[in-house]
Amino acid sequence: MSAARLQRLKTLVREHKLFSAALAVGAFLRLLTVLGYPGALWFAGDSYVYLGAALRPQPNLSKATGYSLFLRALLPFHSLTLVVVLQHLMGLAVAVMIYVLLRRNNVSKLWSTVATLPVLLDGYMIEDEHLIMAEALFTFLLMLATLMLLWRRDIKWWTALIAGLLVGYAVDVRTEGAVVLVLFPLFLLIRGWMTHGWKHLSGWLAAVVMAIGCVIPVGAYAGWFHSRTGHYGVSEATGFYLWGRVSSFADCAVIKPTGREALVCPTQPLTKRTPPGNFIWHAPEVHTDLNSTGGPVDPTNNQLLTDFAIHAIEAQPLGYVKTVVKNTMLSFGFPRIAYPGGGTVYYYSFHLTYKSPHRNLLPPNNHVWIKGGTAYQDWLSYGHQAPGRVINVFAAPIAVYQRLVFTYGPLLALIFLVGLGGLFSLRLSRRPREIRLRWAPRGTSMLPWVTAVALLITPIAIADFDYRYLLPVIPFACLAAGLGFAPAKRRTGPQDGAGDQSPVLAQEIDSGATSGVPTSS
Image (cartoon, rainbow, N blue to C red; front, side, top):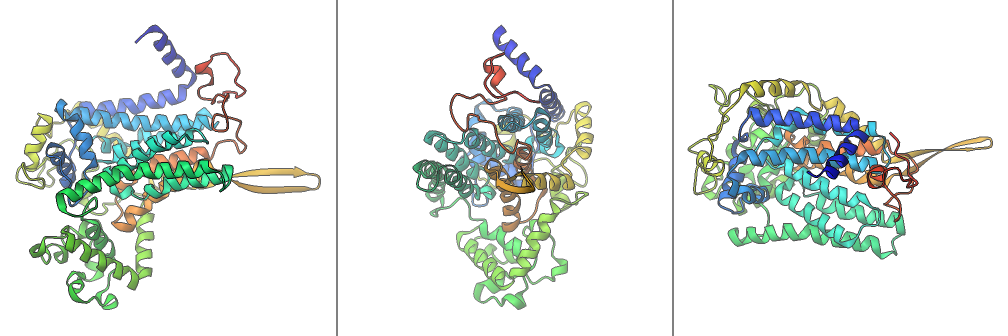
């Protein structure tokens, strides 16, 4: 590193001391994780599908394998440690993007730093970054697209296109986030209307170009899926998971299913059904009874399960709404519970051993989901190192830390409420003999807050609640909450025209020069 760059880095650290300290702590915690758990951690069958599809590229009927393309790109290094280090760096980069966006919107250094703390310090988020799972990449891609959309108010067409490509690939990585394919272009359309009116072409052009960018990766994956299966799509598991969702309230006497749908209507008493995220893996209606016709992720059976689930929702709409609301409230509960089951949440914590009489977190040597190798063989083939090694001197501190420091449910609820308040700016108008309060919509925080809500509710609405599904939600909720501390009347900045400097970059670009925007802390 040249002396000039080193000096620039020192200047950045000095000018942003609070955030630099928080970033250093977050980096240290991730370093402990990498040292304590060489290689990577494993999550049941999901990790095996991703690794198997990385070694033998192919779409999978049960889940999109866009994340496997990321793993495939790193395959020449044969290092799972490299994979998780990059995922940890993505987590840190998400915090940096939040901080930069907040400072650009004139949020103080204190509140900008506070908004990044759940991302930097949440023990469960750090553990998830160390798993062979898709959340870290998905969150990074979406946050990068958000940064591009919010950086300037008048967005260039090529910026909209690149952001769209990022969003589209993010959906290939994690299909539960498909709702963003609509949200992001719609945001550009609404912001264009709020800025220029409906008749101005710039808002329409940006939204259309971004929509095209979103469709390209998803369409390419759907074409690849069709070439292997004969069906356009990203998976054949939609009906399987939606069937699980309705299993929490479905009453055959009310639904009155006919034909083959009667065969998949759950007959167990409601009080004896486990949560959907656990029930679907054991229910005979979707395993034993459908095995003779291709299983639950067969195209025909996928349509059957989807049709039944839709009929169940139509017959019991109140039951559906109640179960979605009830599960959503679990996001804000305290303490954390073993939902949807103890076996699932066990994977979300650091442990000092990965093979015990009660739990075996090592990839099995007899489990084949992607033809061509077992889970254990694929692990060795990709990483060239045996799984399950733990260095206790480093692992013990991070394992204890995770159980104490994370985003508690009530705290997440508070973050959402602050973000909701940040959607509007309260302006106090003082005139002779009157005081008026006027609410003015704040468009900047609209995208991250609505994205957080959508990422929270959508998986619950189509599958079930899972604590892992909260991890992509937290950064966007924090960004929205931080924007609530932006001044009600923004100073003129780069989003509104050229020739101005953002507060976070003003001194870095021209130290000592005045740009018309003070760098307040």
